[in-house]
Image (cartoon, rainbow, N blue to C red; front, side):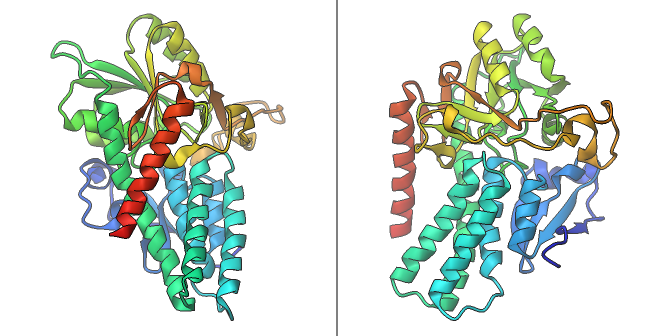
Length: 399
């Protein structure tokens, strides 16, 4: 495909919505095809998320520019998922190009990293993954690795990032499930979930939704209130779809209903993911998370953020330092997310469309990672989690 073209859509007519349980519900993962991000036929394959829930389609990317566009236009979304896509994008940058020296290959990776990181600046997993690829390949070159080995090594590292994501989410899910009671036979535990953090937002399983899946596997009695999550409706389109496939009881609500439900005592726990967590525990996540957390505090509802350690950015002291992405006004004024173009606001109305907000650490009861549950003071517990993850990777690499 030409670099200026949109990534090539590949319909999957053999897959129907009613039998998508095998893809997103029962985890019959005998093939990477069942992941939201996977490598097949020498191309990056992505679940086309704006098409859900009406149809399940796969988009393929053959260039780094196509990958960056899919990240920017949210064909792939969710911090861990775009990190994985970015890692594969790094390989696409060097997959078919001829280089005279190993230094030229590394320079191409640096340029690819800049392009990919700029696609969505708030989610740190993207720059984390591209940095990891570049750092790893630089180290391999320093050890004398030659051209073709370096080229193949990029793909190997991208695959490793994806495989680790699935393992990380399973560990994280168990830590989070331990925090949440399973209700009684008469009354379930009611969880409020914001945005989408499940199998579509990660390589597989999920972060905050991964906790919910773990609770289901533990046969705990749970029920989920799903925020619609304006303006792109990730809750209504994606989370509700995932939970339906998994058979988890749910009710979809408008974003503005959460405070009312909390005041009536109908929500026990609020869970969400993160796109970046700073050293003091401030959480950047989908717009509306801050509102939820403040109202939850007012109503004595526990608030748990679920994220892998790759989402923790210890280089930033607080959320005030995070670059918050602003997206196009058409997401707010029209239903462009599902290609209908339905207009819901006057033409030309000025729009302010922040994609994320920052929840101060004081409104977050705990941050659940794959290594430990972090409690305040986060300046102490978050570095501990990051160090544990680093040691785990080093131990695995030395075997």
